[in-house]
Image (cartoon, rainbow, N blue to C red; front, side):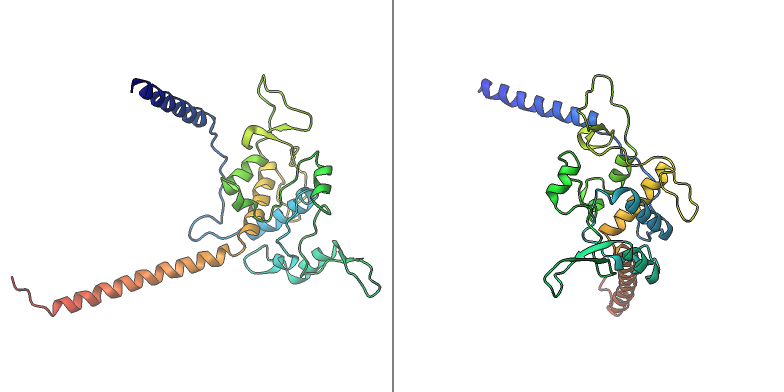
Length: 259
């Protein structure tokens, strides 16, 4: 019996030690003011359009967004480019289509109905171009990662020199907020890397915020309509509760108390 108690105590001690290590290693993610948070949250149109620019000029050479179509860029609730702007954006990319009447594949400008152009032909090609690592698709990345937008924002700004005693392999970089602190993607952002057409200063923090906002919209394109529906539902329930209360009060007022 004593032997069994010793085993139980050992297990509890090991579990407690593990929890303490995890608590010590936990790092608070960076925070910023997300306009889409909360019951009345809405996307910042300027931030969405700038975020698309950052994705196109910085991220799209490695990361795909296979669930997003060019027509989504002018639909309500998103970046809301004009339809002509969205058509021009789509036409600036080339799509391999076919076969034609001769049974051959051909290249054409992308249309609004096309999905975003993939940076690589297949997974193997992507891994070969990135040292064996496969860049994740960004369509639903903001919902797929624990920590969501705060995690993505933090990772984009979390590159720093490794602590003393930490040795990294070639092609691996230290990131304070990345799981395991190791990442094969080199730091993607630098001050003034893009030139915003609206004149906004392209600081690393601004670009990280804009592209993360764009990724949140891609992952949840109907967020604004969902918030509106939620508000209407809450308002309806409040009104219904008030009506039920006064109805019950009127009904019970007809019953005389026996006391």
